[in-house]
Amino acid sequence: MWDCLWKKVRSSVTKALEEERKKKLIKSSLEAEVTLHVSTDHSDAQLLLELLRLEKDETSTVRGGGSADEEEGRYDYELLRDYLVVASVQVVEAQQALSQTGDTPWLKVEVRHSEGGKCERCWRWFRELSNNTLTSEASLCSRCNSAVQAKAM
Image (cartoon, rainbow, N blue to C red; front, side, top):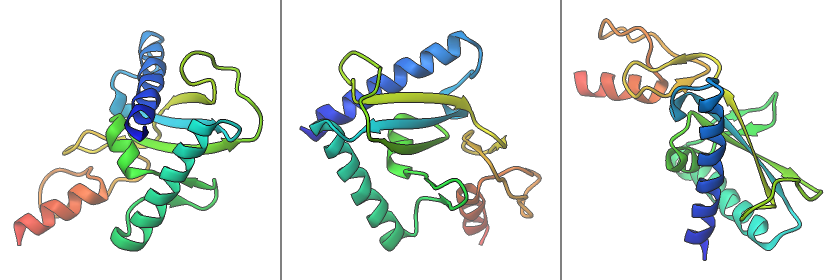
């Protein structure tokens, strides 16, 4: 059941990304910050939120993954971000029914161009990039910067 759920979410996000590509807001999905507004009054939505809570708990305790922006109350779901092939994913729980129709009336997808810059190594967009002192590449995300430094040792 959960694999069907992920496919529904991915289909909705892909559709929203294509609409923004047509408007020339983004060129690539890696430039997109996606916010998923999830209505809590549907069983699929409740399952999705539970799976995301498990990822958040696991990544924060096991790998130290996911990045939190305390000011904005956001959490970047790394696994979902990688599955959707976007710069970042945030999830907002909505108490009321959402107006979007189709396979996922409980899901509204919001897409905007990512702030910050593009990592020269993985091409994802990040709000903050670090300068890599080991190579001439000046703009790397923290993950790529760590990988380059580890490889150099």
